[in-house]
Length: 291
Image (cartoon, rainbow, N blue to C red; front, side):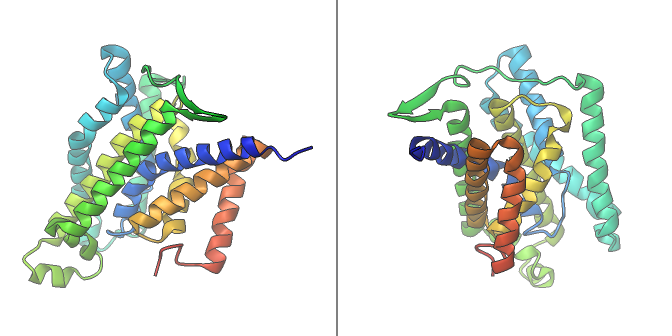
């Protein structure tokens, strides 16, 4: 039997589109963990919260989920800044950010999930938009809009963040804050204020990722657990704190998962993708673009 080359090409393209979505999911962790040394394992909870807000606005008011995601950016930025302030006062300021700080974010993850279950139950929820069903077709290649739009917007989001971090004073301060806070203070910058801004940005990206998620698939409160491992796998795979590395890691993981799901079944996709991560770390412990 001939090798199904058309099926392989479609799987690769689907993986690239999936990887584009993974960029939006992971970029916030690349900022909080890679640049601030804050292990925010609750990041997927903020993504699911964004998904449910997009679902509510879409189902009750008919607002497009992507538009809701954009409108939520300043709201989630303020939420992230407030969360960091609590984290700083309660743990970082006292030098207890390691284990107790991790428990703090685990608590946020648990409370968010339980709260959503109490309000919405465990039924799957989905958004409606004219682009969720249709697809662009080139010969034998299908490009579903529900995957294409999140992929393109995720790449634009990451490009905007890269320009902000490399071209602006605040952006360069964010990249430097985890390396030498004392030097940053000598340059008339408040490290705590810089961290608060950066953490707010990382949580704001979760709002957009949540809106993308409810476009791509139905959601329920515990679906965020599926992304905890993927988020940190992409973060480590690409290179700790590297935004270009996040793109490479997300695309690689998306393609590997898509090919595995296409030829061997969806249940094998996570195992193969994490096996791919382990092999990469065996030969490149710092990640693909790590130093």
